[in-house]
Length: 325
Ligand code: F6P
Image 1 (cartoon, helix red, strand yellow):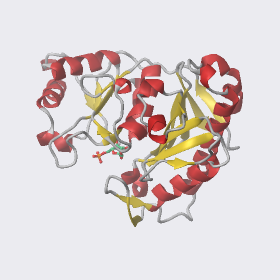
Image 2 (image 1 turned 90 degrees about the vertical axis):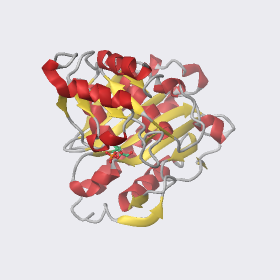
Image 3 (image 1 turned 180 degrees about the vertical axis):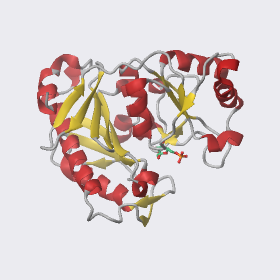
């Protein structure tokens, strides 16, 4: 089934349906998918050699952006400017932009996630979340993740994949040769149990004690209190690590740590943690900041960071138990 047909057939999915016109929502999601097709074409083109080139521009976090970060942001803005998005908040923009005063949606977007991987040909992606908009830009964007009406991400990898939720389950599409997103999984379910964890272990010395304790038990394998051998995977692109967990289970941990600038974690609540957590929870997984559900947290600022731990339900319970001690 094509994305367009899926969007037409799943009108009744959304809990917030009365607050906006569903046809407008479908148009916004389609426009985001056209942006992703354009971004993927740039990535797959041998002519686009210097996409990983560091620009002189610093983003809101003080990181130097790469040429593809800025291109992706421009493409999404262009595709949506005549659409139904009123407020546009991007990881690449300092402030919230107004795209269409008459629009009913507020869009949060990480145009190019995993940009440290661009030149290595590892998967990278685009992440978005959609809320209903009101007249105030900050109120529209700084909402709890539980108010999301839709979220999704695209992975530009060996295959271009689109993972989407409209608030009732999580589904995945794959981009075909004829540039159509075709449904490949209509009901993603994360297994409750896992023996695979995902963390950047180079930060071990800076982690909080609870995270050290959990990972040490995993490393003890059959001799540890969980009595099983664990495997480890870390792509370093949130979209790729999240998709693996959606497909076969696992846990992802990017905790706060005591390096300078990482006291609240690394990932952005508005552009990364909320949209991904909505997809994970809609696929029966769990997503927390260590203690509380990510989706229950109200962002205070546009670019704030948050510790992010998500994945298979039973494994997250173990981590939570340790973190609560
Ligand atoms: O936020 C960008 C990001 O590249 C994520 O996609 C990824 O999970 C994380 O940062 C990787 O961080 P690190 O380079 O510290 O392992």
